[in-house]
Picture 1 (cartoon, rainbow, N blue to C red):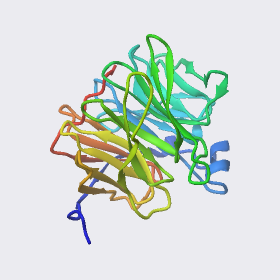
Picture 2: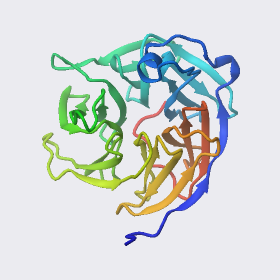
Picture 3: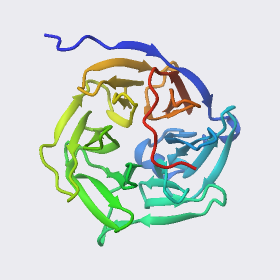
Length: 309
């Protein structure tokens, strides 16, 4: 029996693609050796976030790069360093905060290219491999610690960090490859993509760091990867990147499917997304396999981020 009407499929378009001059098809990379051995990976885009001037910043994980794309589609390298940068958001200090799998939570001054460590461990324990991050309306930082967790090892962690008190709370430690994350509109619950579980969990939030009644908000099906980056619009609709099926699923606040936003490139690795444009009604997505940035106009504006530059 079908519980919900099937979602409407909408086709995205290509905004821009990594230019030939910035593609690194022959570069050596430990990330490639570990994740895509024997393959040529000229780039692998992630972590899209806009500044107030409409410039789009993205990461290139295997080559340790942060790239900037202007509204006109011109690309440049902001910095290249020894790391594996993934998710990004601007922080309260105007710097670009990075979830770096190898090095922890970092902060980048996009003008000077200087990178400083912010959180490199929890207590005296190293992170498994952080993946994505965002700030809530109070300026608290949330981030996922994914590592190599999955169904075989459901020990992925989700953290909340209070910048003022420097208190670090582990909200859960049994995640099945926790990845993208975002709060609901009221910030009473946290949505977390569980990539290897191929679904999105809903975590009720309490100020004391405790959690209870964690549940599955939506469950995806098929694919060789799973749920990845998340975003929310001002209507409370949840946008879920499907990293193995080349699409973004859109669910209303009750978890009912609304749309399937499909990549036009033939690539199936849609990893992350961010709202941009003057009215924040244009959704941009990283299609990592082809080095493409996709876009589509949406009815509702994306939820405004706490900080920008």
